[in-house]
Length: 159
Image (cartoon, rainbow, N blue to C red; front, side, top):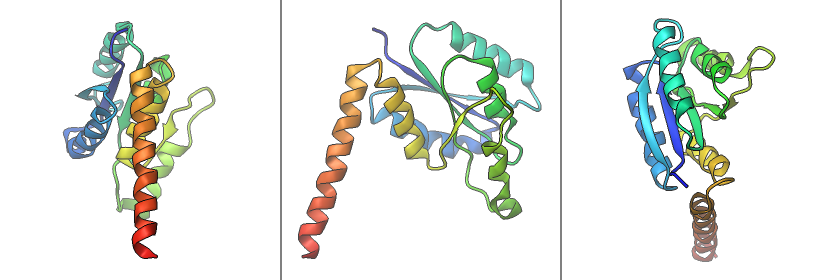
């Protein structure tokens, strides 16, 4: 079976640092990643072409979208693909943090998951893709074991 793919679609290049954090965490689970830029508002035709390109790829995949303010990108992507979509908006103090609501409320039939932490977005992608890839599933299990061992070690040092 071909390696699963995580397509990280950013609304602008300003989201690159956030996208790179997600990509790095995905690689820790053995996932192949690709970073792309496209705006649902400014370049919808470009986004559709990108999504068609990746949807034609037969590998199992998950899309992770990164867009702030008015996050049309996540809903737009979810409406155009059959694979799962995870919205991971960048942190923002603008509007008192209320801009995250544009990621939370979607029209009926549009259902991207929303995960705010880059490492957790990668973990969710790995858990989804682990359903069809034993190597990814084992990487997730190994990560969980290491986290549990760390807590037990911390508890032993605090006693």
